Each structure stands twice: as structure tokens, then as C-alpha cells.
Length: 628
Picture 1 (cartoon, helix red, strand yellow):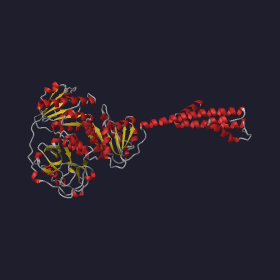
Picture 2 (cartoon, helix red, strand yellow):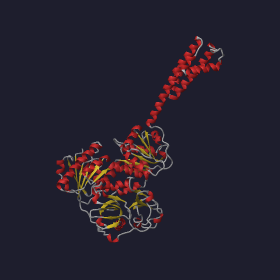
Picture 3 (cartoon, one colour):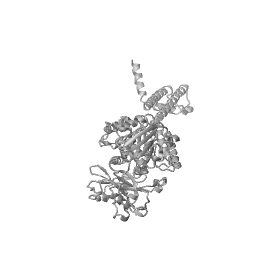
Picture 4 (spheres, helix red, strand yellow):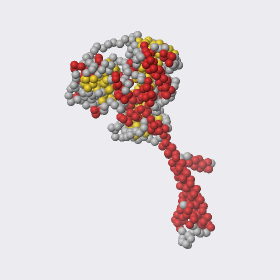
């Protein structure tokens, strides 16, 4: 029984890993040296010169022989002495070899642990990304630009991926990160212990991404629960931005995240972007300019000198910034409020500016060429006919959103070969108030199918990628084939109609430009930009929600001749003043002659200086925030 207990105790100590093994080897070495020293005193009490060894000298001799096998070559003496030293040397060789093996194994295990990224992140005031998808690359790239003025910017990523593979993918897709340090850790964001590795309590903001694969929303919701209900959570509120792909899961995600979480319904927003852009060519360029950190962005600078002024005064008060709304002292965001609205104490203007320190008031009033203003009455549009080629999970939302913008009697014609799309259309019809929908099953990459559709009779054409059935590359390739056919049909028939296409991979946009489509929606990229913006400023969540909503004010590109007389040079402030007369906030313009020039932003200029002089021509557009 005692033997079993000793064996059990020995096994337990050995299972404790490298430190226990080293301790056992040290103990065996000590015993061997002590026993060897004692035996040496008995068998060879004197050395070769006849001097008495003593116990300490014998132990020291045994110790040196156990560490250095070469010591044996210099020994001389009787057989008992040489035999004992040989045994001690053999024991030392065994123990040192075992020690080297243990240390090597322990070091390899430690390196493997480091490779897995299991150590706790200690950096503070950083952005934490939970989850892994292609959106990570856009978010990291934007955070690098946003944090250029920060002292020690940090981005931490926790995902159920190999740490080395994540780092390699970032190097390949993002490249050098400059002064921004990116730290990757391996673990499940839904697991409380793994979540502690990322140290969310020290994060400035947290972005929760839906992973690739089936049912990503459930994993996002579980992650939110893990963050907000952790027994080790911080005392103050978090700033969390969570991505939800299915609108039906938004309420559950909001319950899981509470008031600390900005839930972004990416499926709904992508559908709204496609609908708005299909009706206004160039709008996706405007949104990209507002959402990325490469140009002008949205800021909310405190400006006490505007207290008591009207909103209409504020839109002309900045020389190099465009005012688009107010954030009231209560936190409520108002996009393009009435021009007579008073700015109260605690209210903050919402502006588009190159940076937060460039949003400064002008020294004096801007130069306005009053003689050039020619505000024409609004002209109501009639019913619209839209052609939708292709179908995916966002298509039902696109149908619903389109119904909120068109006039009664408008028609949407859907052509697709997606499984079950007719049933989804039938289910959508019940909630439509203005739009009529008909459908046809056919291959939209087939030229004969397209030739039979009389595409030139439609006001708008939308090409969707079948992301549900195909991988992104194949889905984009099929969309490109459809676009090439449509452009060739236009050239042969000498027709002109706007075409808007959805792209899944931003890298395919360059290839798509050869089709000369009027616009491209890279929805995942725009959503990634939106998530990044909200992670930096939580108030932007409400702002963009209002911009994407059919109710209230949205971004429109309207004919410039409705505002000013074309053909004469005017200041941009004149255009802003003309828009103000219509209750609209101007934020830029689009030059039609540059609409195909990618190097010049497809003709879109956002937030020009008020003093800039421009000569507009008929067909140019003014970019405004308006109710319709």
C-alpha cells in the first residue's frame, strides 16, 4: 500500500511539468554527489599527493566529476577511486543529458504557448476586435490612419484562429502597420477565460465581428453576453460596437449588450446603401469619403461661440468644414434640422472636416455671389421602373427599402436563378405599399436572357452577387460577366441607363471599372468603415442610422441648375447659401465630366472650402442633406 502511495505521489509531482522535472533532477544530482563524497572519503581518504581530502573536498571532487566528464582524464589513484569517479561521471552524463532534454522540451512548450497567443494583453487605451473575418483588414487599416496622431496606438485581436496565421494574413493584406501595434491572441471570444486574455476592461472600444460560416449572429450575441456579464468586468460602461447580419437578431443582440452596445444591422444597412445608390449615381463615393479616414470625416467639435445662433447661420460659419446637423445637450442627434433651429448651451455642431483641429469658425462672412443663385421649384418624380438582376440574402431587404423611396405605381422586375427566390418575393409583397414586383427565373449571365429584357426601358439597373451560393470570387466574376454584357448592349443600341453593381471583394473593383458601371457597392467594406467610425465615436451610430433611414434627411445628388446658374464662376459658399434657401445642407458637388475618372474621385468633391471658386455646367450635381 505504501508503495502505491509513493508511486501516486511521484506521478503527481512529475505531472507538474518542467519545473518539477528539474527539481527531481536536482534532487537526484544532490543525492548522488553527497553519497559519492561519503564513499570517496571511505575508499580514498587521501589524494594522489597524500593530502587528506576531508568531507568537503570529497564532495567537491564528486561534484566536479558529475558536471565535467573531462575531469576523469586527469585522475590518478587506485582502482576503488577510479571506479567510483567513473560511476559518478556516468551518473553526471545521464543527469546533464536529461536536464538538457527537459529544458529543451520546456522551452519548446513555452514557445508553442507563445505561438498560440495565450498570454494576457496588458496594453491600455486600445481598440479590441473580437472575431475574425475579411472585415478585420479594412478595420485595422482604418484604425492605423485614425490613430496617426496618437502616442502609442494599439489594436488587439482575439479570435478562434492561429495567432501566426492571423499575423501572416495581416502582413499580406494590410502591410506595414506603422506606429500602430497589432497584437493577436488565440481564443474564443465567447469563452470567459479566453476573453480575459484580451483584457477587455482595458480597451477604449470593442468591435464584435460575426465570424465566417453559419449563424454568425448567435456567436456575436454570446460574445456580448460574455463581455457584459463577466464576473471580472470593469465597473464603468464599455463602448461596444457589434455587427449583426440578420435584422431579426438585432433585438436579441441589443438585450445582450444593453446600453453599452451599438448594434449595427449590417444586412439592413447594406440593402439601404444599394437602394439609395441605385437611384443616385455617385452616392457610394460620397459615403466612402465620409466613412474612411483617408479624406474628410465627421466630427463633433465644441463651439460655444455658436450658442444662440440659428442652424442656418452655422452652415456658413466654417470656412473649411461643412455643418450637417446638431448633437443636442441631451445626446439626441439631429441631421439637417430646420434652418431656424436655435443652438442652445451644451449643443454641439456636427461637421465634415479634414481633421478635428481644422473645424474652426471663419474670421468673417463668406463671399456669396447672390446674382448666381436661381432656386428652382422642386419637381416631383413619377413612377420608376427598376431591373434587379441576381438575388441574395439582402435582396428582400432591398425590395422593402426601395418601396420606401419610389412613387406609387413603380415596378421592380427581378431576374435570377437563385433557389427559392420566387417564394421570398411572394412573402415580401404583403408589406409593399407603392412598389409592384414581378419575377422571372433565368440566367443573368446569358446574353440571350439580357437581350430579351429590353434593359433600356428601365430607370435603374441593379446587379447583385449570388453570395449565398458561390464563393466571393466566383460571385464577383458572374457579376462582371453581366456588367460586360450590359455595357456592350448599351454601346450597340446607343442607349444610356444607370447600372449599379454589388461587389463582394474590394480587390475586384478595379476589374469592374472596365465595365464602366455607374457605381459599385462593396458592401462589406462600407460596413467595415462604418464599424470603425462608430468604434471611435459612439454618437455616429445614431447619425448614420438617420442618414440611411428613408424617413428624415438623407444624402442626395441634385441637379446644380436647381440651385445656381451654370456657366459662371461662383464661390462654393454661394452653393451652400442656395441650398440653405431650400432647407438643405450642402456638403459637396459632383462634376459630370469627371464621372468616369477614378483618380479624381469619379467627380465627387466632399467638403470643399467655402472660398473655392467653381464653374458648374448643366448636368453637374450638388450633394446635399435633404428630406427628399
